[in-house]
Length: 363
Ligand code: XIL
Image (tube, rainbow, N blue to C red; front, side, top):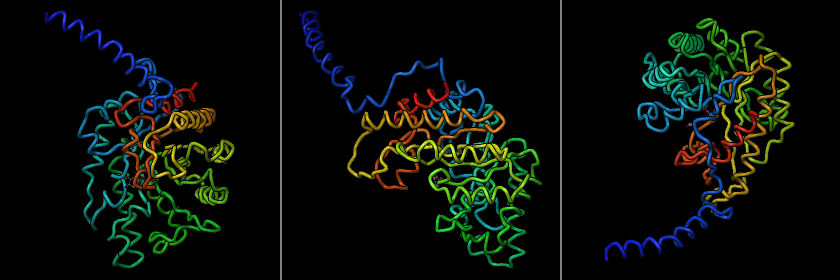
């Protein structure tokens, strides 16, 4: 009787299972169609990208937590960038007191696991501690403090951090794209960028030094302003960091190519340093999942970006870094305040079509 009942319940299960599969796996299902099965173990991003590093951001809490985050870092990526802990407000929270605990955790993990570390970012107006913004002291004292900060930080990680964004986002978005009027510019003058690069160079002559900024494909005037800065730095600078916070439908390939060409012409290294691809630039607050159309468009854009990067000459290649592992961890959710799915992995660490697009761009 018991056996019979069991059999019977199995029989009932078959059509139910069939319906379930039909519902979940059909082309029309919204929840699974953005996820694609990938032959794991054979292809990884870092193994497929044979001529440049594939980077991912991380946090000390993720490193200390271990689990899937660190496993994927090790499996798929060859370089790490700290999402926010290698910025001045974390590393130098009060005058005379450095705090490198989080950075040490990230750098030690990277060294142990044979990953490059890209240092991001020594000087950024968006992560300046209050005591620096409200600095009490002369301009000369301010400048000496910044020199000490850059020297202390870069020397500490000499030989472990392969590259630094020395200055991040120095250019204003306003008309004419002047230098942003940060406290660094106010107290150290228009040549503050040059001074910072010189101190970083002195502290670790082998570190690869970058200027990093956003909207360089989208805005031709900002791009021109950036290349002016870069030209003024001469051989103090080794490369250009192009953030690449973009959308599935913009900027267009030829605008991305213009940044690439300007960098290659100058013989500099190119870092696509903060890649994420918004699927909801329309800012629809009510969208609840990634549609199959958007997932496919996003896949195509990842492929396009990676293809453009992969086509540059070997000498100009450096790394392509993605700004976040899982969709639900993306900074864009807070920044824009609307739902989005901008990254390569979904919140359950499944590889998305976007991941496949990345791989396709490498072939
Ligand atoms: C963002 C981080 O993702 C956030 O966690 C942090 O709170 C603020 O900074 N441009 C940059 C990055 O250069 O450093 C920013 O990262 C995103 C925009």
